[in-house]
Figure 1 (cartoon, rainbow, N blue to C red):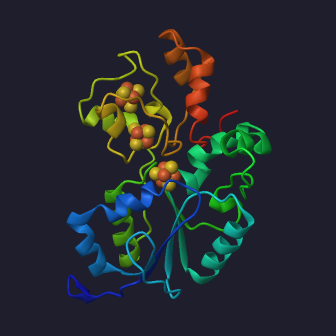
Figure 2 (figure 1 turned 135 degrees about the vertical axis):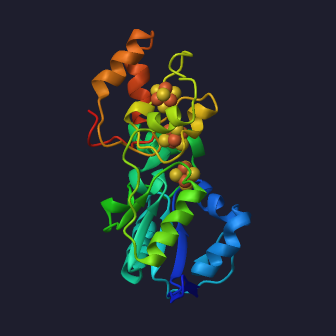
Figure 3 (figure 1 turned 90 degrees about the vertical axis):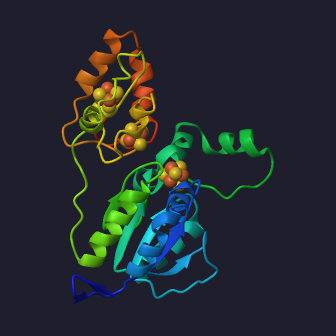
Length: 251
Ligand code: SF4
Ligand code: SF4
Ligand code: SF4
């Protein structure tokens, strides 16, 4: 393949799923308008959701989902061994995501509540970097298809991707959205990394923090804004903990 007259390698890509809803993979598969261009840039050798091909000669692995069983741990380690670049794709892979809600309860009791006596092989929820080194984290629940393709282009061109670090509020204001906090909703936009084009507030829905922290996080101020508007501390804490994306910095 040639780009601006330069011959480029067409790296081989594998896309893998672990414990998650497969929504991140769907984002990629559903992007029909630009899938053809993407296939021109890379060779997809392993992507269960769209192809029966199963090759293990991939150089870049995009991995969706969190890790919850020993067999998943072994499979992830095998992928890590093969891939030159491993990308954690989506909140489940980057932080445990919504699956992490389960960690608040006793595991045997939760399994029993949902599945009765049926045996389920499931352990604690772990993010990928709890088990293997991760080179890049592609945030979001689900990931943005535009951002996925932007990342692939960067990798093909050998550019280190620079994700936005400013808060969602910046994009929200750029889009001239009305602030949903003023409409009586909780919004984590002031502490959450932008890059999603403020899609939730744009649709009159408060941000849930799926993309993780922005560069300057002020929990006190966030709390103060919401308490002033009648929310309880518990409601705001519940929202901050939802995707587990603020774990380690929020206590
Ligand atoms: S990050 Fe969200 S969309 Fe992606 S697999 Fe997890 S739950 Fe699904
Ligand atoms: S709606 Fe949310 S993201 Fe938008 S300006 Fe208000 S607090 Fe920030
Ligand atoms: S607005 Fe918040 S919850 Fe919605 S996609 Fe963006 S970061 Fe995620």
